[in-house]
Image 1 (cartoon, rainbow, N blue to C red):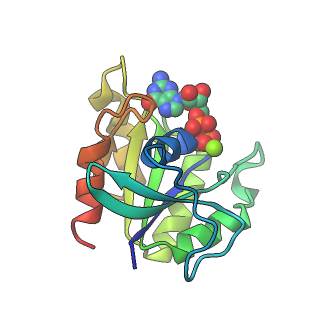
Image 2: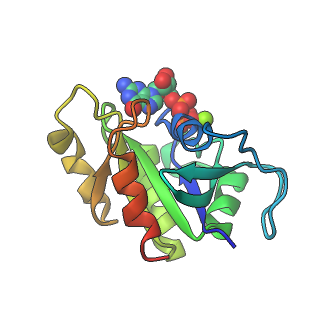
Amino acid sequence: MLPVVALVGRPNVGKSTLFNRLTRTRDALVADYPGLTRDRKYGQAKYEGLQFIVVDTGGISGDERGIDMEMASQSIAAIDEADVVLFMLDARAGLTVADEMIAQHLRGKGKTCYLVANKVDGIDGDSASAEFYDLGLGDVHQIAAAHGRGVLQLLRTVLDPL
Ligand code: GDP
Ligand code: MG
């Protein structure tokens, strides 16, 4: 069985961009995989020799009501069935209430989770990422999904312990 990596985060952080990058080298959409349900988008990623199943979620959308945010049930299910979660954040937008809600949910799960600051192209990634450490979920991995920067290093970090 290949490891299952779920991409989680509020809308517009770049989940689908990363999913497409990881799956575009082959027609990789997976219709069926043992243990996975069908209402999310799965792909078999082959990236620089690394193989895994990647799951794109529609996004956990926090709305203006903030604290009452309803996490999309399919995103929650994607977290549950994954071996590891990439919690994606937008380095340009900074930390939002929705990000904090997702972090709170993830902390409660005890699921292996990596913080990913996306869109660090053309900005100072270190200073943009600094506030994400406040989420208390460990190191922040900087990437630019649209350009591929940092992606291989991230994947090695994530897959190595599996
Ligand atoms: P999703 O809603 O989380 O799936 O986000 P998308 O993948 O649809 O991306 C949202 C927007 O962010 C799109 O306009 C992307 O082109 C843009 N985006 C994604 N990754 C990057 C990146 O690495 N750098 C920049 N500058 N923009 C990005
Ligand atoms: Mg998307």
